[in-house]
Length: 466
Ligand code: TYD
Ligand code: MG
Image: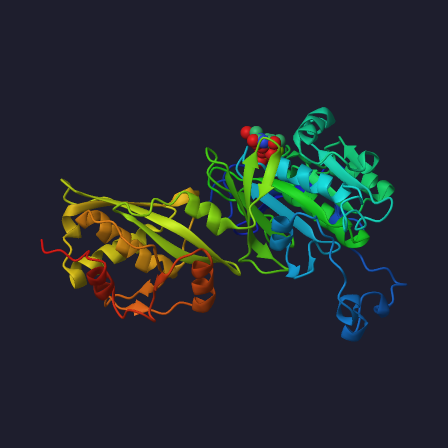
């Protein structure tokens, strides 16, 4: 390795320096310099004279994936496969895909991936299982954060006991080039890297976890994934700012970004695709963290409604879509008179701007004196909802708490609320209604039944004179 194989380049203006400096001399911005390899040290980038044009051009009709749909590699965890993408009966990962799993420390990324690995290695005794990896399909697990003993302890906690122990190979090196060498030798069917922040290459001087190292290692791993057609999972820590490894450096390199989130104090975890080249980005997988690892929640509506306190002032049930799945959840609100010049609006799992708009609509069109009240709202179960279809339920919950009257019937509220107080239609209404009926809700309030919020409040006896 020559001495100056790397160079520091400003991500803002492109100014470069041989040494790291805090402030870019080109644009004067701070902390924008990132270590990169110099062009010279990137080997194999030049075109050799005997390279034929057919080596790197291909007509569409010759592309394998175009000729036939290739089966995806299933993890046998339905909630996980659903997020990875694919059609029914063919869900899972695509050959050569690089999938980044992000989440706060301790949320369960390692647990989820060990569980995936064990599930894939489970033996054929369970009907369909087992054949996916082939007879001797190996899985390589790069444990950079823990040692194999710690991972083994975690595996021992899981419910699955009958799996192919010899084909789970741990790689303990954190040098990305050694890992690549091992992967080439072992030829695993799946690779897990836990975590990408522990990986380094000697070609760069930066420490593990620096933007330069993380980016270079990811690029090298992506190269091997595409070359060997092996799917790779990368675990990525989320920084305090909420982005995966600083300035979203990885998101455009990898094929999919999956985010594991949830309230760390609760047991609910939601896996969501933020980016997915091979599937929909609005799918979610719902899990519960138990003593024996993750438990799939295939019927989340029932779980969320378990928490519902129907018949209490301030509670309303809504139906939102998470991907293709309708989800019934409870919205809670607490409205109390305020002594502040600017009353408080607080939302947990709900956007503040929605609460402000709905409070204004209720004040203007229903004469509710919310200008002198604090409003606290939350989505039960720690769920995050940004869909407009929750508006109507939120408005009803706020009104119900203000007038201190519960919603007497078992009802579901579905609808966006416009600035004129009108109820607007939402997409996939029929599917939401079906789900509500399935769970025993007879009263379903939507644009089909009512034209404005005022009419809804009147019908439920929530319009009082103040
Ligand atoms: P972990 O997967 O180590 O988190 P991450 O890799 O995202 O940092 O998860 C750690 C938490 O999960 C820890 O608080 C213990 C808990 N846990 C369970 O509740 N049940 C289990 O079966 C396991 C293995 C972990
Ligand atoms: Mg971990």
